[in-house]
Image 1 (cartoon, rainbow, N blue to C red):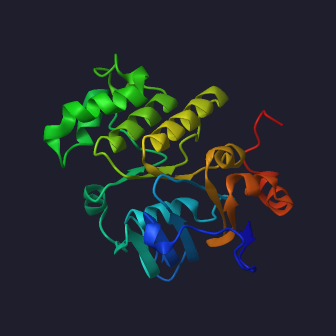
Image 2: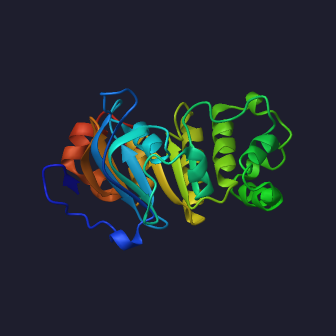
Length: 258
């Protein structure tokens, strides 16, 4: 586990074997105001990466910068070795990147099936095959495809949003706070679904406020603080590191397992 003032102790995947590579990114929403101050992150094929940190640390901004929704002013972002810095979101979807935002992540006036079909707007001929795939991961939706998304609970909407992002067959999934606003039971379900998506071969990068649960399931984790990488390591290393516990886990994502 490393901090920003020490040489890395965790060996990251070699640069030739990276799906996502974020290097020294400076980014923000308003001119002259940066949220990210030289943030870096890597993800190898099939990895589940967790990003935790206090409110305002830049976690969601990092995902949005990867997905072309926030202007990157310095640094580089690469996908399978190809530079994608500031590439538009629709082009990233076509390249195999899915993004599930925390809020406003479904079309409430449309049915579940219509929401899923919206995820296939670039490849409409493959709808039937992809529907079968997402129904295997989210069987709860299989018999409710005609129900309007606006009538669903928060957890159910999250399932629809994840399913829609999966419709295009992404090889990278960006998840912004998948357990936000859910009951403890629904949070457990959300984390199980994230693991299932990852096991299906999708490299997953997840921002999560429930830090403990995030670190329990991720391969590697990054702790962001004030737009910078404060610590990085395997999920287990970060869970057991006294500094991370004292500075972050004491106030982030306490659960009922303690």
